[in-house]
Length: 280
Length: 331
Image (cartoon, rainbow over all chains, first blue to last red; front, side, top):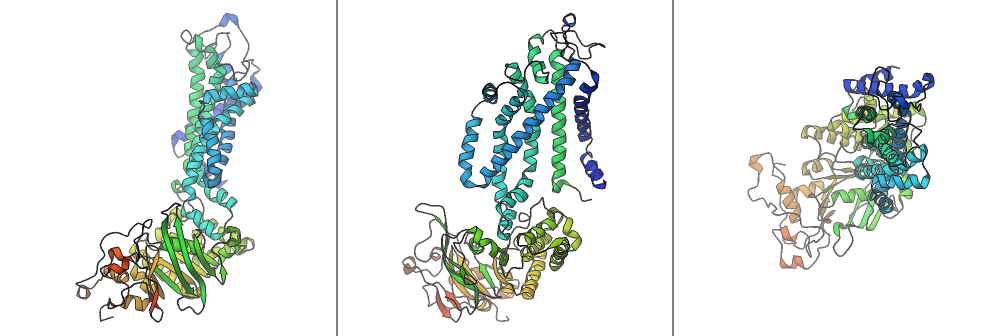
């Protein structure tokens, strides 16, 4: 318990990290618990209430079908956050594995990296569209497609860092001791990759939420009955000149969440770096 | 080749070429020597002479291009890394840079523990703890330091941790690859004394790589002078420092600062120019381009290492040169 308290104290020693963490906790709690208890249908259409400006009745206004935007943002957070987290998680795992292998084993470098280069030569959104078209439009297929799109980014960063770390003396020292190659990868190289990987993780989380919006806008994303922040912006874009709130509020939700995660990610990265850690 | 009653490690015709093609970099070009059990052999030379390359080949951190490395009567020059693994507990290395040689994400306990675990040297948690404390004590660090991270230590302390890690597996042979050159002079003395101490205590055999001639004189029994991947001179320390035979050794010793002004030589044979590229070494004697005594013949023949006195070998065509008395008469 003492240790946990100490870690939290260190993490929140910068006020901004505390604020960002609070935002994330609030957004997540709302996403998880609100739909359980509210009983509101975020898809309830009310033609009379179309494109109403924010008011005490509709805090964030209504969209072109008269649906309450504040409700849809709360419900949408479920899917958007899930897509962001799942995409970041899968692409970081795949990218780290590929980058580590390519960076450490000279023989695997060319084969792996040429495939990665080929994938990177497609524009992100085009690759995403093709993958979703092949896989079929569903929530998990969008996650899978986006994870494939972002894997090369992580792989490149991880490979570059691995190339540097591999040549450091402590790796030679481990070799001289006879430490096995899997253990060198796991105990010596991987922990020193944490900082760049965490940065990628927070970036990809934000990118994935935005990319999902792009895919939905192009009609190959999540099915329209599932409210996500991306689909909300995409479907309301044509009304934005008359009803700015239809894109501004979901936009604020995206920015706030992505920014908070990035700040917390930075805080965690600093915490993981023993050099920045003050002795207890 | 040289008189070695009981060699622990013996090297023959060792070569390391980097890069392929017609002009590979000849980092080490046909080096042969032996180290007796319990002996400390110094390896000196300028930067780029191949000192570290030799040290790294001996413990197979680098694969030799050619040649033999006999360790305890077994040729290990070309065996696989898997076959090498069990031998790794008997040969260790201390690195030059104590800042890069310790994993910044590991506590000292994990660093030393990894060495023990790799060779199954401590059974159970208690024995492991005790052994780590013992190792820290051995290098003059407090056992409480085990839970700290490397960055919490000074350069000298880190180098001691490096020494403790090397000793953890109870090696019989240690390559010390310029272990002092990244340290302040005041700290150097501490680490030298520590090495001296441990050498006597455990009867370690050591290859001590350095360009600090004073430290080598203090620590080593015999010294090899290396130039451009080739051995110029081998001699017992005393002989080498007082009666150097090879012009290169003479120049090296002359370049070393002498604290007493009264003892400074006026006509010191100082070297000019840089060490030539090992990708394109001079023909004949590699040192001839900077040698004050070079003759036309030096460009023709590669001088062989020849015994000029018992245990004293040099690779130079000029046998007519007077051995320079390098040290003042007071010594």
